[in-house]
Amino acid sequence: MQISISKQQGNVTVTVIHLMGDVDSHTYTDVINKAQEAFDEGARDLLIDLSKVPYVSSAGLMSLHTVVKIFSGHSAQPKDGGRPSFRAINKEQDSPARAHVKLLSPQPAVEQVLDMVGLKLFFDIYTDLETAVKSFG
Image (cartoon, rainbow, N blue to C red; front, side, top):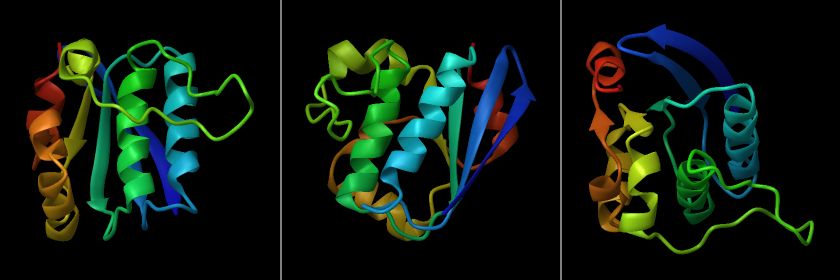
């Protein structure tokens, strides 16, 4: 998996995490760590570009939810030193951060998985960068 970051200016500065490759049990912590790094550096509005992600496993889905938790102010670093995990999705509790974490252009197979597990309703999903960036702030 390759991860790069860019910034886009709209109503606010939006950090875009561009993912390339599968988001699965081998790579999900990379996504979490990159999001935590961006948050620690001051990012508060995040767009996750899934246009070059052909596959997302259950671990990958958990990483997307963990990113929302990070942008709610929760650390991804577990107290016991184990792997980071936030298992429960709480629409009310996560709602403020959801306004600051959105998805861009998931491939059809990934969008189908998001839909099957209910995350398509949880995330705002956009198909073009300009509209997505303008949706923040």
